[in-house]
Amino acid sequence: MQSPRRFLPSLALLSAFEAAARTGSITAAAKELSLTQSAVSRQIKALEELLEVELFHRERQTIRLTAGGEYYVREVRDALRKISTASLNLRANPFGGTLSIAILPTFGVRWLAPRLPDFLAENPGVTINLVTRMSPFDFRLDPVDVAIHFGRPDWPGGEMALLRRETVIPACSRDLRDRFAFRQPGDLRLAPMLHLTSRPDAWERWLTLHDTPADGVHGMLFDQFGTAIQAAVAGLGIALLPLFLIGEELGSGQLVPALDLPMESDDAYYVVWPSERTSYPPLAAFRDWILKETKDCRPEVMEPQAAS
Image 1: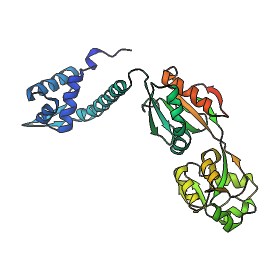
Image 2 (image 1 turned 60 degrees about the vertical axis):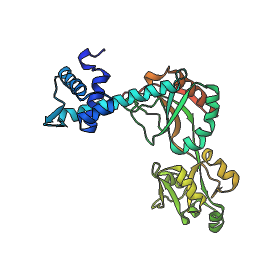
Image 3 (image 1 turned 90 degrees about the horizontal axis):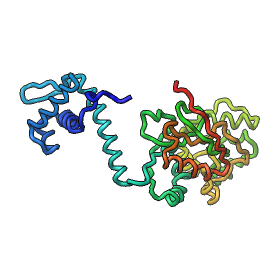
Image 4 (image 1 turned 180 degrees about the horizontal axis):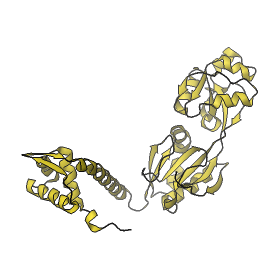
């Protein structure tokens, strides 16, 4: 439904208000906007008359935001920033469109980034922006077109397709493996065990799977796989790491399996997008491409779920 015209002030009025609020001065705002002080004052007054709300307290030669003005300027500033960003993106890429992708840090660096040149070669007009998101977010509030998600297929308000399952192994440096001479699952508890904060029960599940007591498991905590991988390479302990993310380290011998006892994770990787953006050409191209890139993909699309 279209908003009434009175609630859609011109950019000139909003820019004058935002500049005055940010600088705390009509004079400074006028200088920034290359206008006269009287012109800026008239624009702010016109905005107040349009909204029927006082935005500034005027005290002699100074101005101070009212409570309503403080709230309004935050919203206006965010809107102006989005318009500016959209304009810059359009100018930089007027034909192909821009695609903002939310990535998991290690997946993005180790798996996605090396493959993106192939996607861009197939879609030369598309500009990609990568942002890191560690947990699900609201597409309505975050300017992201598509996300890589690890977990359950339960992203409210979005559609998703399965990319791949994940198999983890207990991995460590060769020196650490040789020092402890692991023979059976319980032997791993003699060495330092590295944990990921996003998967706090991973070691318990691995030990239980291999018929080993899982109580009282402790060790160093890491918030990303990337740092856990480097810690394992450095010999700080054993980490449960996805096979497809440590191929280089295994190939070079920087990491070795502590024991050849893998475990398939309960969760999986998904590509997720907002329902209303399904037909956006850069998104559709990326979705089709990444599903081809994941060899064991199962491109079934989950229906949107009601937001909680």
